[in-house]
Image 1 (cartoon, helix red, strand yellow):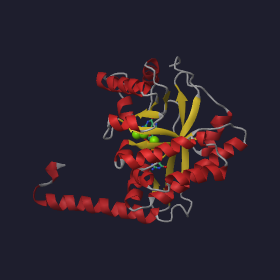
Image 2: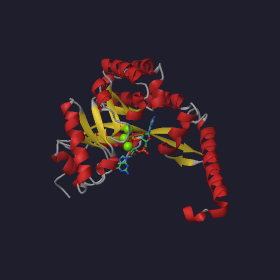
Image 3: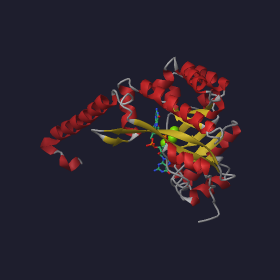
Length: 285
Ligand code: C2E
Ligand code: MG
Ligand code: MG
Ligand code: MG
């Protein structure tokens, strides 16, 4: 846009910034009370074992529909919720909703479904997160092994000592821990060694061209061997083509998540999938 600038360049930028500020203000004002108004829902995206092709669990992904703003993607409202201190109450709702759902699947005879919930940095830094997780699991009678949490590198590196403590306590009660978007943050291999992580998730940005770009393939293969050498499992994010899945499977990646198998599903659609399981078939084009 540099050529739009010139004499009015400064005004152009100010206007652009105002629009951004206005958008964030609109988001935060609608976010207040959104839990109480029942505007959130959780979608469930299947994770699939690359050896057997079978579904192993799901990631919980938050969805927000607001009367004024319509459907707003989490990439837009989560940062605003963090900035305005609204993420904790939303996070409490997500955890409660997911545990209630896991319990409902158990009650319907659909087995112990494992679901991973995303936690943001400020939630994770919150002293009450571990007791909250324990209390929510207990209240719904959900075994801790059914619950996972997904954290990002940024969110643990902020206060590593505190993070190690919280992760150890979650791990001790049996909650699985995944490191999300691996490779996109400020990775420190020393921290990786200290944290009790069960799963590394290879970020979609490395998966996109994994079967065509030598650099992405090298990164993916390095993450796979790094994880395995540290006794962690690897899940590839954002797998869209059979070619990507075959490449990852043939190089020992444990599981995948992505549109190839399924988009994130409503609770009702995910329930249908549990009732009528289907396998990922990598031999078929
Ligand atoms: P994430 O945890 O890395 O989630 C993966 C994102 O990739 C999701 O976007 C998912 O819908 C998308 N995705 C999965 N497979 C594919 C694929 O094959 N192709 C493409 N193009 N996309 C795929 P979504 O649902 O928009 O969520 C974005 C981010 O918002 C998440 O990234 C996570 O960081 C955050 N988020 C979502 N739900 C929550 C939540 O309940 N709490 C917190 N704190 N953050 C959340
Ligand atoms: Mg995630
Ligand atoms: Mg991710
Ligand atoms: Mg990602």
